[in-house]
Length: 157
Image 1 (tube, helix red, strand yellow):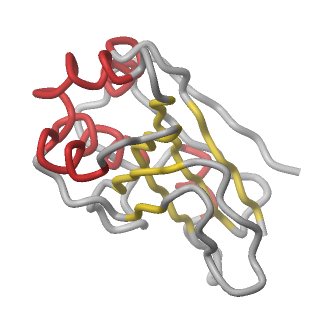
Image 2 (spheres, helix red, strand yellow):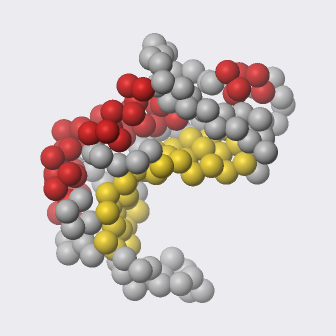
Image 3 (spheres, helix red, strand yellow):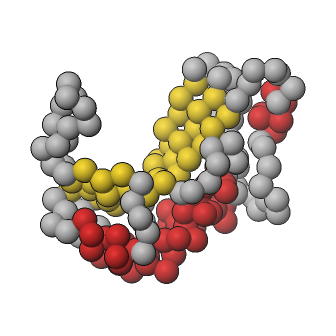
């Protein structure tokens, strides 16, 4: 069992959530976070996205390609960019870093939404079943401006 808490108040310094702080003394507890922009659908020119955003994608694939020889075929083209932040940093830092790279291109991203799927998926991994996260409201600006949901993949293992 795990808990997910999203609090809406400003935080001056990124820090571990109260739940994370309580379990930091446990010897083998770990936390990993991420924030990734994903653009997928029928993308005629993957390089156009790279050139316009002025970012090198973390991953790209084309419809019909495979991840590996036994993997199923991809159903769509995809261009993705993972915020370049160490995974042990708080989720807020990942989201804020991604937004700092995307903010100058918000109109372009909004325009892409008319023909492609544009989203941001955040990741939270831990081996603690009693921890959670905090995301200050200021760090949620990207989701509001781009009119996308706050997506969070949670893995507790």
